Image (cartoon, rainbow, N blue to C red; front, side, top):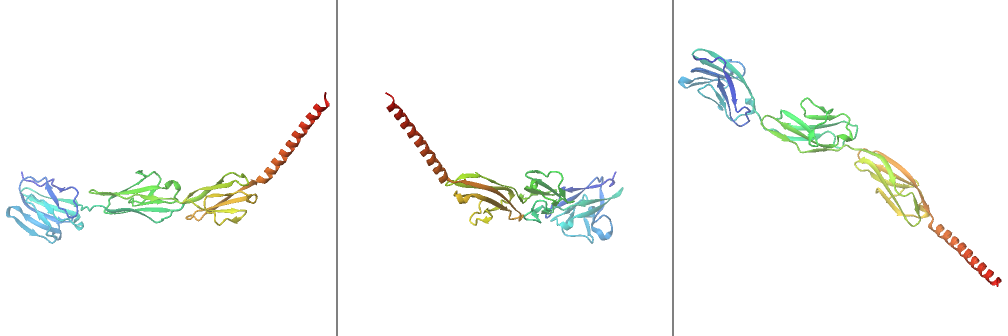
Length: 320
């Protein structure tokens, strides 16, 4: 028995791609098709008609929505070649057989490859506790996923409804890392180049290491360090006066009695504009005084020794 009840339309291929062809293949028809009509849209209004076909007569009547890239098959199917984005939308087929009449509407997507996946930011030099937003830029993407250091994002981060933006309301140093976004649709996927997010902070925990008691003639060696991103610049002071030539974390000089005093290290972060300082007191032992003491002590020991020898000889002379 001829019939068109329960007809359907299958897209071949399932995911049509721009510039390629797609067939809207009619299924579920039994018997001979007397006439079929295709419409652009969800209704069978004559203004929406693409064409009307009577297969037995090879008769094709073009409608208001006809376009040259549309063609038909005797089994009621529609083929569209050279797909363009504006072909996307609903299409309705009306099938008539000897025993029935039925219609079916199908949604036609037209996919374009995902392009230009990349990450940008609204803050090139983010500072700790400041807001930062990363944006994944991609065309034709239906889904966007983020990752950090090769794994999915940790929980608690703020993503926009479409996942295109990742927001840190108060970024912390633990957010430092390499971020990627993956943009995809049904036919393609692009993974962005890694974006290295560096969180700037500090300087913190400024300290000076080195011997605080040295002997004149030896070296004074002090090293300043701090927890800071980027690494801080350093300036040294001696008793409150800048040491103009000393801008390295390591300070060295030969010790003299005049070298004793307060040494101050100042660390400055070029991004946060914050500075910290710390001081130590270095004492210098006078090496000449030590030599003088040694000479005096040696002289006294020499006198004592000579006196002892003379006393011993004297006693021997008196005894028979």
